[in-house]
Length: 429
Image 1 (spheres, rainbow, N blue to C red):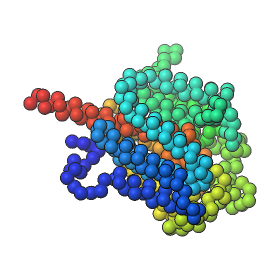
Image 2 (cartoon, rainbow, N blue to C red):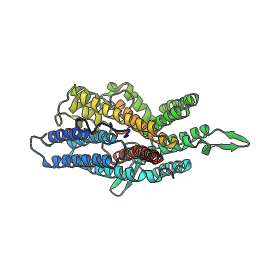
Image 3 (cartoon, one colour):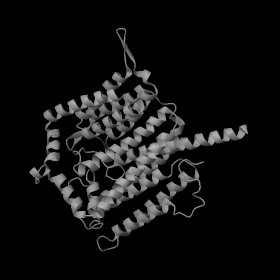
Image 4 (cartoon, rainbow, N blue to C red):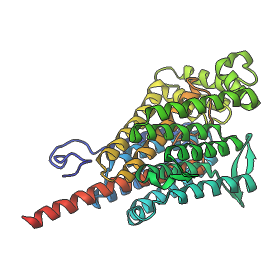
């Protein structure tokens, strides 16, 4: 029995969800193609390509029984919203985003097809930690500072953020610890140091590197994944409280010392005190969300370009302005469904290592969504992270599709194991 799809779905007459995704795509790209009053065939060509890719992806996943077919459809809808808004803001930016989307789809399929061949072979905790440190050191040596954060590496015409991939490596680092905690045990002068304290030290070293790069948002995201994994799989309530207390004290000291952090907190607490200066970005975001009301101004009829960095940090505000609060709620619901499907994969997996991987990848996407949406709505301070699958950026989109491919591969392993057990039971009979 397929654990991800209703066993009776072939017999019912319900509309396949892929058709609904295609219908939304047709509506979005059709509206976008006539937003200036003149038909733009290029937009419809991109939309048609996107629809063909969605059907191809869905049919391959269904035909080859490669796991949960719905997480990819959820992402397809999110990507449609992102591409629509990027093309609406700038045809040039939107076209670049579409190219990154094509690359992301390629990475998704490659990861889904080949991951199960080697995921049981590479589980070395020090390997993952070494890779993370190497990326940090490489960024500090040859990285370029953009918008105050030294977290970019530029090679010719290409640039990428290593931190986008460090957060994925961190999930595997935590999975390696949970499945083999003894790998971190150290004996010093006859005294054995518990692996949890070694883990805590290693994680705080990583957080320190994030602070050096002024990657405060990613540092918070990694810490949230770290605490969640400890709480769920280690049931280490007291140890989690100790970690949170230490991190809270360090954050308080950092806010007192670092002007950049002081500005973020002050702007979050009092955005209207300097509405033409430091509070301009967040106040414009709030004005945009408010002006959209329930149903929005319509695609192409708002003024999201007034928000600085709208295509990256504030894309959710642009969606709310032109598609309304209901459009924003739809985005949130899609991410909630994505987290739900990811957690379902986690619960169905039996191997402790892959279970932690599924949990970590899902919480990474979930917490990142919370941080960026909470930031633009002033629930939490702005962190600088992007909205997965929606915000502009090659590194962000590629790493998000890599997470999707890994989750898809893990869900496929569940079906392969189930098929193997069914065949084994059948042979016994």
